[in-house]
Image 1 (tube, rainbow, N blue to C red):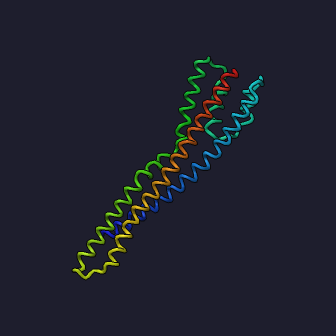
Image 2: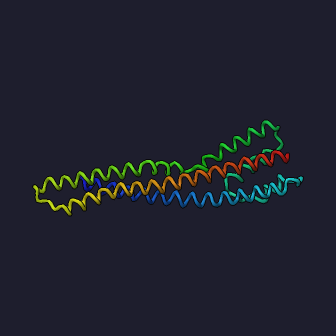
Image 3: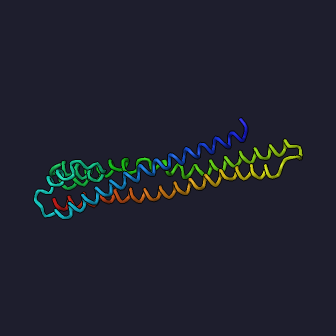
Length: 198
């Protein structure tokens, strides 16, 4: 396998990383949009119905089909019935912990891509430059400087591509980590309001 083929393989791998990055970004974008919307609706409903004596049944009926981790957590808290206050607080903490894998799903992929992409780009550049210098050395002094410059330019593109991928991965990672924090905060707020109502 020549260095040029290694360079090309790394470029294809970075293209695959880009597609994976886009898939995760779209999937997490849809998830957080839906989850935060349901969470806001649930929080508003609980806040506006705190004086209702049958808030427990109202929340269970209104959000019976909701799939967001916040609503699932509050439904489990409500279904637990009349536990002691300390036991209820432990249950809220358990529901909060249970929701974290769903909330943070696939965010590690974005962080891994952000770390790996520049290194893969640099590796692709090294293979591309080595290939250009091998072509120069095999030319016996008759190598075309334009061709060598074009080869080095193509090799440097790998680093630029890797850095561009990493920038987008960092941006999406930070954005979705902030959304994950918002979803987690909704679980805590809704649970605390419900417990205060009890």
